[in-house]
Length: 222
Image (tube, rainbow, N blue to C red; front, side, top):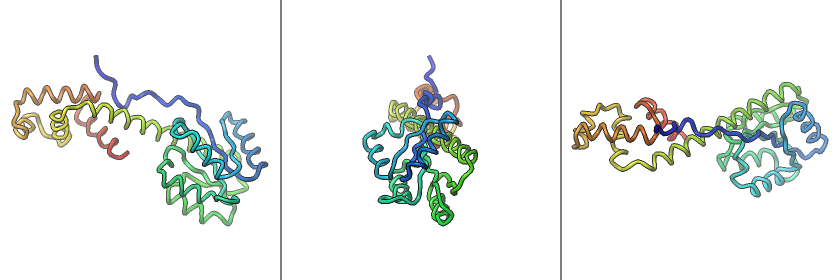
């Protein structure tokens, strides 16, 4: 029976959540209400430090489901930009995109943050519809990043099942060499190359050399 393709790893099924980090209770309550009216789940955090404690307590589970972070720039203690810098250092932005809430004077700072990987910024006062549209786009980007990560993990597990000879054949197949040239390069028969090639395709769940090359490229990009 054919193995499922690495690209067909189980879909991300967890409900998306919007993390609200703002030191003003009235802002958190208003945003939470807005998201509830659009049937979006949210979690409110009164400070960047509180949000960091949540991440620490949940570990990898904090990045298991689609999520985005709606982050105020100016807060007592750890600022939004300082929290953002820590998330950048951890390499988790694709999984949890950051949308900054900014005052007019913070716009240059927010623009600079976008250049370093922030998803977007919303200037106060903001349009409810425009904000929710950006949040929904961020959640979709998070889901896509999670699915790509899942495919890479799935692929790595499949690739680990290859023998060393199968890896050699795989590399030459990806280079575009026909079976005869692969056989010459490895000093084996064409029939043996065909067997190894078939096993590589079967183990990795691909149908062609092009699909194999694409999956290797996506894995390397991760």
